[in-house]
Length: 251
Image (cartoon, rainbow, N blue to C red; front, side, top):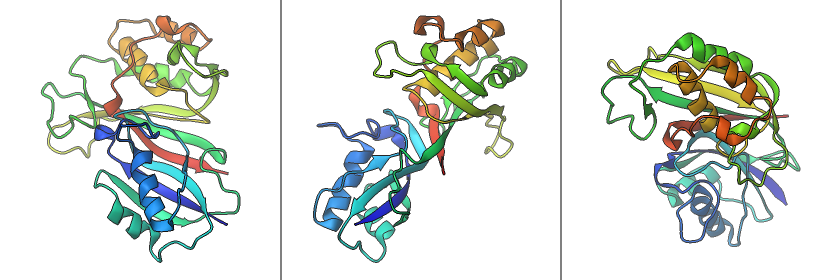
């Protein structure tokens, strides 16, 4: 039995998330049939982070076990069997016992906002158009409050399967506008790394920080939310299409 690691990138626009769902197109549902064709039997994948519908990934990681030897170029064989909106960027044997989820030390996400007054048609699936005034200092103050261990009850749906709401934020910052953007496009990004994330956690964090940045919420109220306040006290959930899983770190 050999364990394999897959590094994966995908455009989440036309996927209903990572996890296989009957009758719906998902990333797992795209990759596992391709693996079954190559190995001749079902090959279940373990994933580092289960992304929701519309969320993208540039640095997703999955693992699987197989007794049969793979094709000589597993990456090329998988990409030949999958649609163009998902790519296996690396496929190789992993250390014995490697598990993409349990071995992960942290995950890192980026959320992208387009600040131009006129929305770019080229960013409509990859950045949320936000043409309203924002106080960057207020946004930065919120980000500076995040590192450390906090109770993020306010930043995940009330109807949840989570039983532990504490998460350790390793780093958080706002970046941009991006000087490398084409033309006059202004991209403001929020990047956050944590040991683990709850459902919608990054999107609710961004939605709430935008309320602070727009002057609709006091920065002190954001700090209070990190003490385990109920979900209704936080802001709206930001749209899915601005969110990217950009990396996973392992021990």
